[in-house]
Image (cartoon, rainbow, N blue to C red; front, side, top):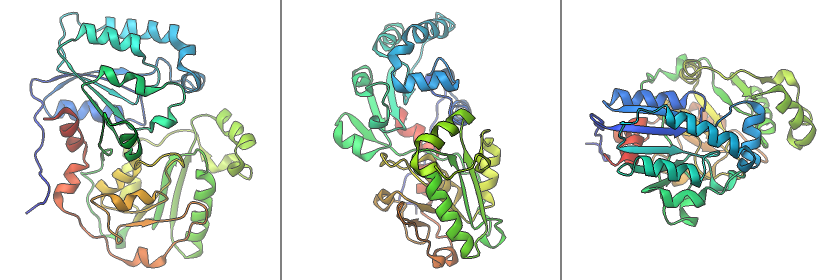
Length: 341
């Protein structure tokens, strides 16, 4: 018998206004899942601009974009049917939205349950103090234990996996012993290169896809980030992998490398994706040992300053978990908890 409850949420008759950033197709996954569970969903991109410059300004100081943001939300909210009623307003990791805009939404939909979910650490949101928004929400969640400790109103809820349908292929047929797919920031490039070199010295097959959103960002980092001074532009890709290609990479990999932001304690989306995909994980985040799914057969912590790889980790077979754990960390389980269905 499973130790964890598996109860697929029923969203029949529920109408959700979802405001969140466009992030590697995760917004499409959330909308699709709501529809698949019987609900209705209206999606608004949280940021008024997804250009390199637009995102940069919002992250430095969102007030600099306030006139553009106000005009954008006036247009987006105005496009919603005047008679539309929402049961939930779900806002994810806001960067552009402010108190004035939330006041308008609260007035427009006074009976809705307002839910805030942070999949970034509050301290990393430098363009806006998101703690000032908490009072507009009935429930506030974070993927970060430290934020939940600092802000008592926040409830802890890790991220979700969209890989639960991936077949658990026999590792003997895996194409790669170790793979990495991710956006390069902070010290990620250096760690990736160190780990890749050591893995290949052990005779392990690897696949590394280092992504940057813009070539200008590469040159900025090349000049300003000490961890990238020896990098080459050919080491990077400037087009994100499609969701289906990410899933294919996971299915072809025995294990995956995860490198969280050095200022972040919460587990990354990649960590939970790998859990759902039933693959092994090497991670720089020592917090993983505190989670209910952790075991040393499937997960290995490495030092981000001096990463070492234990070849025995790759020889151990994958250890299946309680089925309820896979549901808990699925997008269905995530929605069930956030919406309190």
